[in-house]
Length: 324
Length: 262
Image 1 (spheres, chains in turn green, blue):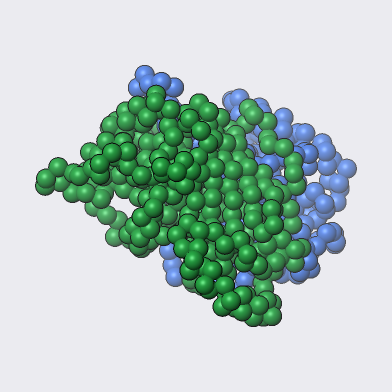
Image 2: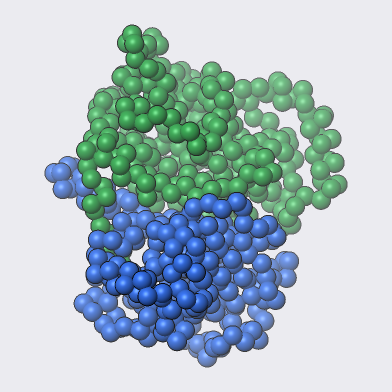
């Protein structure tokens, strides 16, 4: 499954020849001419460990850029900043926003096409982040859902595995995983709801196309970086507070554009919440250094104190009945 | 109780489907004579969805039935856990407080080997240099490195750090770097952060893995001890591992208590 030396020679040669193309492709561009290595059964070989891509805003703000009131700090997550200093043990985050154009490429204005009621609801959600029910699902340790699991956040690191008939992605954040079957079988029964959705994939040339449905309705499809505290939802560029219904349908396209980079594109459809399908497009996975390994991200286990401070509820008092 | 009934029905179905090969199950520590499908690198092919069919998640030792809990002969060899005297007392205290103190009831990661015999399926993914086990309970993942690497510097994980190698046709997984927060079952059998677990997975038929697990913890036990049980292959057509996200159940119960929208 590892590429043979001759394959590497070919890749290096190809990289050299393609350099001008990359430069021209630049931000958000997608070069599909790269020939990825192959698994022994002939599929493009995406296996390995990856870090997320560079920082990039999700959306264009609706109005004038929002500025925090004098004397307040900016740049911290609204939910956390009142209670916690930055985690000194956190892995280094992707460099501060380097790419300025929004990940949303369709519609062309870079805005998430929320229906009017949904835009209003988003404002309410962001204004009430001190309530458990409306609090950011990732802060509550619910699954990331998609495409949120692929956004540039420090703990979003990945390991991709392949066996004949499947691509499997393991996510470091909150130990999530997805089996992506490639056998053309239909989605699981619509009564079944899954935090990361039900994935069905196929190869289009060298691009892995994944159709995902059967999501729950208690996650957010996007949201990364730090929404500045006090900013109105209309001024956000981070995607926080955008929600979805159980009708969410995501179509992802993973394309290896060079030996170390997988480009990511996702079309998001939910007729109950959005006025149209919309598309995000960004560098999704960058090959990690040799010594990188996925660590255990035990999210819920240490979350009680934080949730208690933020929302006043005592999550540590609750017991479930998973075994009698 | 509802969950328990559903699990028994599902498991009975799975067990019936493979009843004819039960006799192929080997006992004892003899290597299996079964020679089944192999991966392209010549190792026994463990890929698939598996589940334990026993009452070990409730109690790993022999126990009588209680309301909602079936009786069981236990999975501990000799039925004796060699606790140090203080640890016997600690286990009894854990038992008395089990309804509130069992970490699994708080939806914490169950640790190893408890995750194996929770009443939920799990899927084994086997490549040349990794065996990945993805469990339905709390979307727990173990990445087991079979690339010859050794444990990294000591750390503190709920699920430990797992390194595997093949001993003939047996996958041997050595797991260390645990915290002291998990239990072996719902009766409060426990360990310290010195826990060392060695699991042996041996395919004994197309539908069975002989699962043996050695437990060592010099802070809690007087000597190592062993559990053994079969893993059964789940053979239902179109089966996939689904979600049991108990974090969501906890959140929902809080929102409901507050008179929220749920």
